Image 1 (cartoon, rainbow, N blue to C red):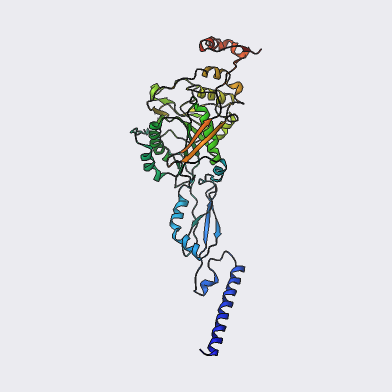
Image 2 (tube, rainbow, N blue to C red; image 1 turned 60 degrees about the horizontal axis):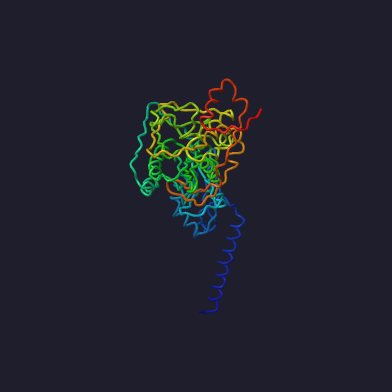
Length: 439
């Protein structure tokens, strides 16, 4: 090769290098909103930039440009379809699929991201142009004018089978939201639980099918109490509220016994204006309301309602009393109990052995209002031993750090009002130790 050819190749190489350097300078100072770089004009390669779409609380979207190099661009192109479908479906509420000791700091980092809230960037686009998602409409409550019975399937199946059947329809942790609209109601279903695994599988099989058609965003929380102490339903519901709020700012909470299944599709699990007693008519009680102030079984409260009454009392170990205590708290907070008509709020109760009654429940009820500000959410003590996100529910294994305490009964002059004399005559029958009388 002659020296002239070598010199020519050197000049050519230097020219290419200068062209590349010039291109880099142009890219650096060029407007970042330009879709393609100057390399596309040279037909050497093309860089694609995609608009990230963020769904806001009103369903509107805003675009953020995401720069990428050639290798990440190819990965985005290949996964574009799956990302687009992900943006249209429920964002995962948690990606934890293995059992582990629950860490509060990690839960704060795994914030729930439902549509209707800022849900991060989702890549939407194709190889030639940018696209943005159209805003979804706000979900409306389903209107069912005629009787619409819900027939539960009480065939016993293992939890593994239930998880396999419903897992494809749900997000991890038993979460669901409608895909064609933005849910107005974000509902946490809190289920206090211990040793009723047969009931749990039947409950999960039916409650998801029942709730999916109601156009709400929801997630099911199973709060299981460790062995060693009598079952404390109210304390577990307080724990469920606190743990669920660490994951997402839920609009309302429905506290649900695992052995109750709804029987009418018109029984909507949405957020109530006033605390709502849901299980009005249960087959065990011949579909009649046992008494007017009852608030047990299934009940719905907004986040504000629950905080206003300091949650449930933690004093009720064993069966009974905690729902009546909550009824008293609501009345003391100038809230009233709302109910659906008796032909709508119908439930069936799964058969189970009767629980041992709490012998101190009447004592707690008498003095419940006096200590409501000190006994509830602000006094609950517990440890979460384990947490796991199953396909159909989120499971918390909790140990209570509270114990039964001797209650001092305080009787005020109001109890001796003539209108309450009949009630006073029952106090010795209930075994109250009346030693503290304030005048």
